[in-house]
Length: 334
Image (cartoon, rainbow, N blue to C red; front, side, top):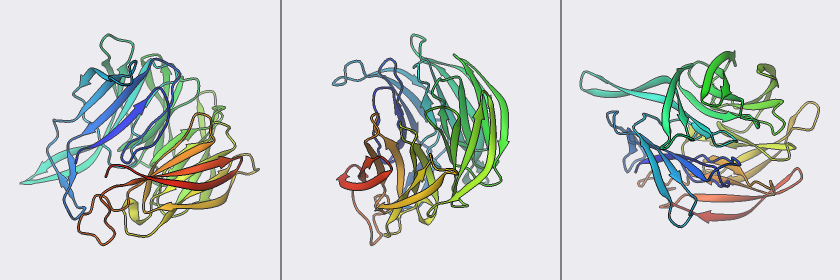
């Protein structure tokens, strides 16, 4: 089973193994296709040589007939949270983090951290790669600020966050912020004045202050549930959710939660934990902010486990101010 990372510019939902984002622009979707990593029937990784990955740009002007307008041979990976790509709010540029490289040692293929960010010009006909940046080791979750002139990238192995200046397709690394622990994803608040970063191994979510292009780690760390992979901020800016994957990011048959972070409290704090299922990973709010969704593994990549389900699921959450309630679960692909 090939895994994908996806971002589109029309609306937001969540799919297992996918990340999604909103941009008020042309209806384009970007898909990261990782051919290096598959799983056997026991849920164990099977590594393949690099060289077959791709990044697709898909035109969704006619949603019934999506059209691939660019197929770029760019190595990328969904190892870590599936939020390794994003489209800026104007729909002009996309960023793709290349977190993993595959090397051969004797006769054995091994995965190790890469350090590249690809800059794709979405206005070109067809869209094309225009630059490759070097950041910290294993760049993973990333996001643009609301105005699109700044982007943050979680450097997982380097335990830092890369700060990128964005002026159209002119993207530059301007700072690196040490975070003390492994970070997997970082997301801005709607006003662009703060950001939240998930510390996967430390079971924390951390607050960053943003003043212009200056990003500062406030040292405010909130204890989450186990293994928070992703973080999403409500369009209102009142709350954020973390997806606590549990068991190091793998299913184990037990249920885990999303944490509700009150961003208006002084200081911000976690006010609730909502059980959603076995290994939540993908996470997103609807544009109106009244619904959020979490993608649940449910053991769908481990056919021989007692907790195996052929399908993953989407946990649907009602958002009423700062009150979050699970209201439905929808089966989707494995």
